Length: 217
View (cartoon, rainbow, N blue to C red):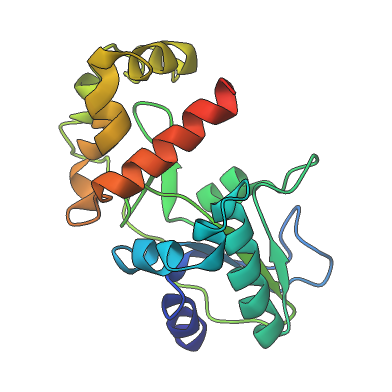
């Protein structure tokens, strides 16, 4: 597992969880499923230096993810899987929760034992061989004061209701929501688990713009 993680880190990714096979939703014969997410802060520099980022074509991050993860999978003799391929879509949320390193947060989105509320998965590799799977992590919300529940200025993410996407979009597409759109979600940034993990302003703006375009093209 360490060797695979080293190869993933060389291209800006890292292992964010792993499951022993068989795994529901994975290809038959999968004995280990490895979940890959951004390795901060190296990820952003790797991605922005890529051809996909600069060529002006749609979906640069998905195309970059497909290229680098397919290369990793090929080198490992595995199969690359992506959360954006579908329908039907691979059950990445179920896989993440089953890995023992991600949980549903008080505000709805997943929280990770290392990446906090900034957790994301760029893809996975299904391997036909068994690798040692790390022990489950510690649930980061246990004993936490939950600043994420009060950080959203319009209450789109709170402990009182599921994530209100429409309310979030209404806010970040106005002048009042400029900070959220240019620097990233305030509720996610309030999570104390991801100390040192915060995205750069340009990175946050890229993701927020993609979020807006996906819902209001």
